[in-house]
Image (tube, rainbow, N blue to C red; front, side, top):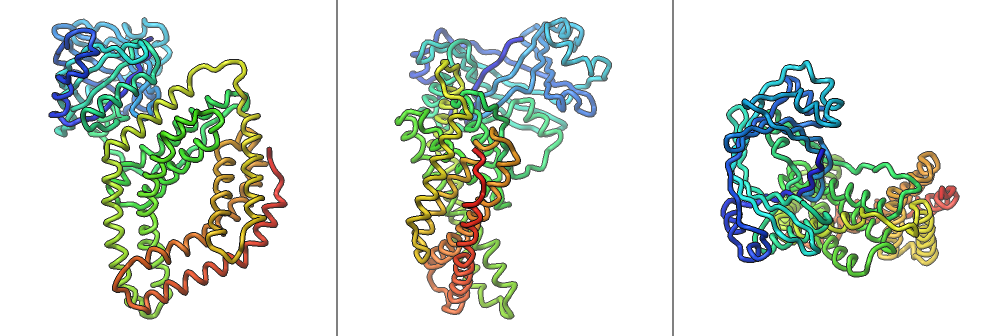
Length: 499
């Protein structure tokens, strides 16, 4: 088995052709481009058993010869695909499972399907131009420029993409080359294989917002490897919600994308002792800028879909809020357009490539002196908890800005618990986080009320009555939170530290 490691980048056909001729690429090329037409057919059972097992079976014609390939699911994030690949000749252009099973490791994979009836499901047809290039640190990669289409039951999905496959060297070198390509042409990362796109044509799946998942972490793993795993998980969540954020049909996509961004920022902060100042400075301001664009849009989402409907439901004349609601909807649409521009910008793609390069670097083997995750986590949690207590001792309950500062420190501790706490055991973590979450919720109420006031204050032409309704709602929510805060703090302080 060979392990295929590649980056996949989507580009429009005109940009693809310009890049193929770009002088900057010709200077690092190890030889002239080689072009060929590739026609492939993907096979599975009628119930897609291979796909459900994470396998893809392909029959491809190359010139006058045929090749069959079995690929495993592998992993994918920030455009980087890593998966197992088994390949044999297929004389006569027919799938031959016996020939594949003769390869080491394949028989176990295909055993449940040896007697299954396979049928062709969809095809790909594209022209590939490829050449090898020298990477910046001495590695070698193959650049493949694919232009064509995927066909399935009358549906067509165009192919216009670049694959950068690592031949030798470190995966982070692929990201450096991708960033150079991005400098030359607008590109988008694409985590979907051609097989995944073909199956999506056959059986479109209704997407749902992607929530954060907690990767399984071992207490003894090197802390920097845990950082790589956690960053990859957060980046995967961000990418999984992008299409829903752009469509803007369900505000939950935006909410989950913001969660992913906060996770990324929190991880850079938590693991800062393992990172260089240059790495942090190159990423944190850019993540903050994207977060600000999404955060502003989320504020208008909450006003439009939660706060104003809640207020209207308790009024005898809800129509009195209609002018305010119209103004909020207009600002929400403008904020959604800003978010779409942000996600379509080259800088956003470059940011994800930079994160991918950092993840690849952190995943490299470590020395014996590297700190174990449990020791690293214990120290970082202690520091985060001390900051919360110090901020609480200095805060002014009557000052919204002071409460906002306390909320930020509580959020930082909460994120630290979420990403590092599992190595200490789920039960003690769950008890502690329950009290911490109650405190965070109350402080969030202060913030939500303040944000609602700030956003509505920027609107013009709103009747005093509508403004007064919102002001009254915000004031009531603020006072309720202020009254409940002392008891919530006492319960949190009495909660047993799990680390």
